[in-house]
Image (tube, rainbow, N blue to C red; front, side):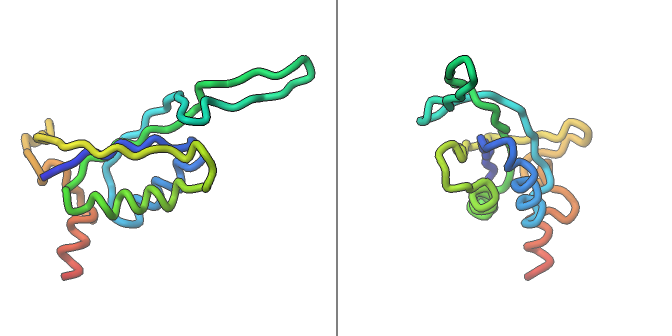
Length: 127
């Protein structure tokens, strides 16, 4: 029914990712500013008095809840927009979502995550 995508990306790629998601019709998302490290373990900075390692780098976490049939297109859009080809481009996690409830209306499931002109509505119009 629904999935949650959690993408950890470089902060400087956030605007490109948001634009790519909007282009395919993903309207609803949340962004959290986070700090973390991956395989590279941080970066080494050199200054006049020596060098030091910054091991927790700033990142953006993008959270999206969407229909199962939109997961691959969303992953593809994020990967293309966030890719630099260097270590530290980020990770994408996909989780099952048992239910979604829109508090203001009481809608549940797929209708709770639907927006005007979103990816699902665009699919219906194109068929």
